[in-house]
Amino acid sequence: MKEEKIVVSHLRDQPWNENKDQGKFRWKFMADSTQIKSHGLSCGVLVLPPGESLPLHYHSPQEIYIIRRGEGLLLSSLNTRKVCKDSFVYIPQNFEHGLKNTGEEDLELLWIFPTDCWEEVEYVFKKQ
Ligand code: NI
Image (cartoon, rainbow, N blue to C red):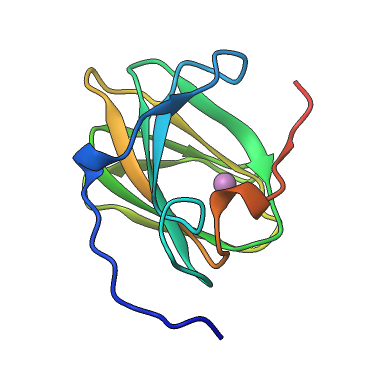
């Protein structure tokens, strides 16, 4: 096993990523093995502008969302719930979920996966 050490990183030091085909949101990889020497857990930041959505999808790892600012709806095939700053959301394995910004400011959240990096999470999007 590689030698491990504590890594401190700052939001301002990581670049924004975006993919216009997926929607008008942007994200940063924070604790992620593609950026730092880490494994087993990964975390990043996603920003959804007002009116934008992260479409319904599922993946095999569990996921946690922690809402940092803004407000919106946590979408699922069963029900939708309101979320806002300081909401914590636990999503079980293979459960469909999505998020819509219903507020007037950006909706910003942390995601956490039990994986080395975001890249290894296989997203399956619900057919529209
Ligand atoms: Ni997800």
